[in-house]
Image (tube, rainbow, N blue to C red):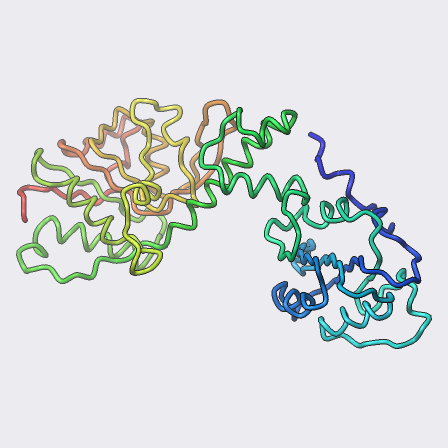
Length: 374
């Protein structure tokens, strides 16, 4: 698919066609590219340059070696020569300042800084915001920035994707791309709500610590504190109905989710974001919804082993590579190296050396909930 901002790319070694390559007159419109930026943030540079500008944009782009470079657009209050603007930018980045008149030609790249005057403001602003969706701006309407910038901004502010959305209708040739961008951005927003799991450190009375609840808490704390090791045992909690198995597990999970800050309440939706619930009775696609960025726990309530592919289930329990089929999409590979909890009214199936069941129970810590303890 063609990139809608492609027209604004600059071939390597050729100055941007939206800029003037040889102007020696005073100007109010400037563009600067600063490479190998290691000691200055966008905010520091923006704060220093903004008093000189009526319009300003500072964007950051990262090279393949993870060292960023900055793109700056300036519409200054007063007109400047190239050499004057060059010295201002050098000062902003703590790089040596030059006073030689022959350096007024902007085709020089000095100390990693290039200065040019701008011919086409709109196109240049689109070009420098292709990769930075959070540029710092002064006096600039975001609508004139790149398609990429505006699509990310739209996706962040649009909860539900709809084909009748004005942004989608304005770019009908990119509706599939916009649908994927929207889905990715919404997942990223959810990830911001999620923190690490915590151990359960509340002191229980002696009766509870010696009960099945205490065993579950010790298993949980071992997982959270000591982390994953190969074939670490997962929890199989079983017992008659009305012994509080599911209620206890959900309350434990709720108590051990890290909050964004102490004032925020953990809501059910945020809890569910972190729980992977495999789809029962759909063996081929049982694991298709797994998201390693969101899911911290695997929970199978009312567990029945006949609902799942046993080979896949054993790989999941052991933390080994699992290939998950996805409807309408390519399969994915992942390892579920996290707490897995199975809750059932029946005891775990017996091992049968003649079937796939061999080795299943060896991956489990089997705990019987024999009575309700308040």
